[in-house]
Length: 418
Image (cartoon, rainbow, N blue to C red; front, side, top):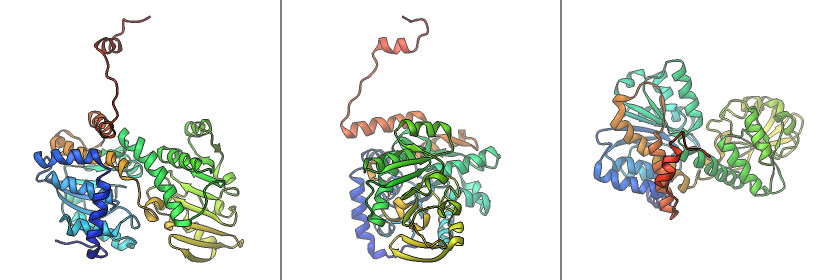
């Protein structure tokens, strides 16, 4: 078996951590029980480009239990947990190509190693597999039945391909499932982002001016958690509806140019490029902290920052100090990459339980329905989304009401009024 991990001797530690996360993933565990019996993915070759974390380890285990032939690579150079990579190889027999801190060349070498598997199904977090296939490895399209995409940034890229009629095979947008973005993006990103910032800096959040760029589901979560820790939250937005919502949620809203001189901690969660630019960094106070929880490292203008930096050093792990020409110091966390995975462990298992249940069931849906799908981006079928919510409630011991016959009739009629 070919693989590339940092240290295979870390496998036992990784297995224990995968098992620990699995205890908080009841929906995925229920799916595994059925997959073991039914083998719905038998004969399907899967190449997965995901954050190699303990939760991902459990998803890979479930896909293999369902009969899939799985290969894994990292979707971000800093998000890999090296003990998990080792465990996937040694303990679960899954070829894995992921090393925390790998350089760009190694990153793409690993992506291509996963694609050498000649997959029938791609599983992306950021659409790097899809991009590589559409750019340099178009010959693989003949093997592909469909793909799945985990995150907002990836869905944006895929919908762009679809609009230009360039998409070569169908994709299920797992990110758009309600049981994914309502929970993973909001509660997962919210908690793990603050966790990453605190682990990296050990700074007190309470009393700080905490600037959140972007008020989508991820931004809502980050703003909420920062406020809960006592921060004075400022939101920057380009969407008037989201800006209005953040005002109604009790946060200040202003342009980034106005927030730059007063912010203590800045977090970007937009999915766009150069959200905080050199022109804004010049305005920041001495000691300002910048980080990103959007998928790629493009949200902070790091090239612009390099032009106005006269000296830099790593002052502590995941914290790079930039001394600007004006004499002020600003600090970039985790190289501008996902701070919740660079400096922390990513989302808690309980929310990834729903996200990865969507991945597993979308893979099953593709295996059964690929011949009905066109070359476009699809939402997760609503019945799958609702079933995952129902299973999660059952796992939490929560019961809900059901409609009576009278109520069903009322909701489906037009002629019953006051």
